[in-house]
Amino acid sequence: MNIETRLVRPFLTDKEWNLSETTVKESSDSLDKRTGIGTEWLGWQTILEKPNDALLENMEAIGTEIHNKADIFIICGIGGSYLGARAVIEALTPEFNDRGPQILYTGHHISGRYLERLIAYLEKPKADGSDKQVYLNVISKSGTTMETALAFRILRKWMHDRFGDDAVLRIFCTTSKNGGALNKIVKAHGYRKFILPDDVGGRFSVLTPVGLLPIAAAGIDVKSLFYGAVECYQKLKTDRKNLIEYVTARYALYEKGFAIDLVTSFEPALTSMGSWLQQLYGESEGKNDKGLFPSVAQYTTDLHSLGQMVQDGKRNIMETVFKVVNEERTMKIPSEGNDYDGLNYLSGKFMEEVNDKAYQGTIQAHNEGGVPVFIANIDQLDAGSLGQAIYYFELATAIFVYCLDENPFDQPGVEAYKKAMYRLLGKED
Ligand code: PA5
Image (cartoon, rainbow, N blue to C red; front, side, top):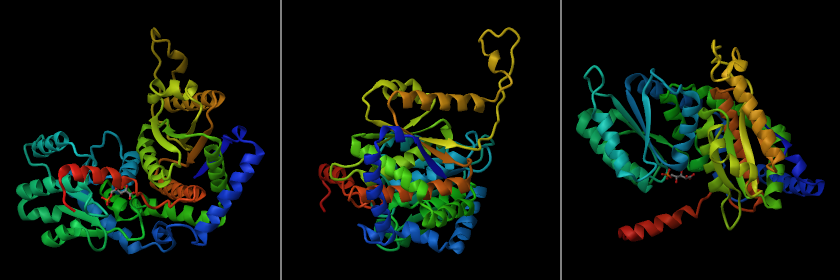
């Protein structure tokens, strides 16, 4: 995993670069020496320093059990409790998957309509007339998040009504070691429980049971994912040149007045990685009137909605483009006798070659139009490469937020809407 800054450098003077680099190097040192803010939250690094193979094997075993038995696997969580799993699953599970369970998400909003339709879908028999086999993983560190808790309450009842005593074997809970409502529910029902260590915050938790269990249940090799991250962690301990360059460029652009970081990819399977990064950046940076606004787009799709804005709108946008370096070539363009659509000049080429030209043309046009473009090179679309990308961006986030002189690991602002909502709902404490 590396990030190219060649399409950013011309936007910065040497002075701006050097000033930024000094701050970034200080922030990087401060993280390493554990002298910065929020050092009690560095568990996302310690899990990679001492990999817990027994945990990985357990995740793999339970994931395989769910994978083999479930027709539907429901992931119930919000924010850092589901975005990482969703990113990896959507990147690596074939779009029209007919092997393994169908994966559905809930607990990430408060739509009654969605839940009602989800349950109707769960109740609909399979083509052969038999009942769908449903498994559920609820994930909440606090155990009290309204969106997740409400969905879990409704689905828990449905699971018990439908599967009776067997429901206990189909519900898996991931939460903190102690405390929180979810722990009380686990204790009362005897569900299987997995622990999110206290020193890992939600958005840094994809390589703990929060992400590993659902990812394993989707049939993805969690050991490769985890050890991809370990490899990146070990490398970045001694060689951080590329990462320092990336954060230097990003921080210098921020200081210069750039306000928006648009995360994009030309591979739709990577759009959810963009959403994961959006949350990692957004919740970590957005404090005390600081931070870049992270946004996500899917190209070329959104070139037909946001493209005009990116090309010609207010010049305060930078782009981060995920690029799969070793992309598989899959679909050849056929030739057609009469060439009515005028596409015969492409026949014999792969769709991927055309997409690559779209990528090259877009970054060139955007760059010439005043958009600094970071190219985030992911080696290939596999678990190991995604593991590398996950750690790379976690580290880049922590260092960037230290440059802002803020705590990368808290999210005090998220409480404001909750307080207002609870007041309106008449919650007493
Ligand atoms: O990154 C975070 O800490 C948050 O996005 C949380 O993951 C999110 O708010 C969900 O919280 P919880 O896991 O406590 O339900």
